[in-house]
Image (cartoon, rainbow, N blue to C red; front, side):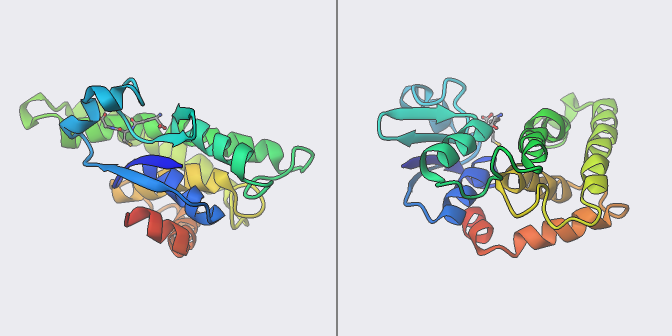
Length: 201
Ligand SMILES: N[C@@H](CCC(=O)N[C@@H](CS)C(=O)NCC(=O)O)C(=O)O
């Protein structure tokens, strides 16, 4: 398998999963936002020139959540997800998708308005609104994590997806002071060798 990767991006999720599963893979590494990501060769892999994307034999797939589901279905042997008849299965699906649906949209706004745009085009109102929204989205995870070690029973791909977004939120300055469950959860995830390896590729 070949993973199209950039540091500090959602591609870390896929590398993390591959490491947890002990699967062989190679990486093609980009600098986030570099021109190479918009080169015709890469646009034939990902039409928006984004990461992650994955090649597996004749198959090409993009969207981190879809890639995670693909890898588990093709190469997971039932690992890192509860069985369909497991009471945690609905929880698992919910938190697998929660990050891209609810956490990343305000994060995207914060990154655009505080890092990507030139200072004269930044909008403080947008940042305030996105920060408030991000806080609400994280509070839902904080409540869910009360008395839990992981999002859906044992460690699963839901933790790879939404756990990654929780960590990114903290690194981007989200308020974690009122979220002790999330602070402990992020530390628990960051102690995993597979994540440490995926982050440092
Ligand atoms: N929903 C997509 C988001 C992909 C995405 O926006 N990736 C970012 C990095 S986290 C990217 O490639 N940004 C580079 C750019 O926009 O040029 C996924 O989960 O894979």
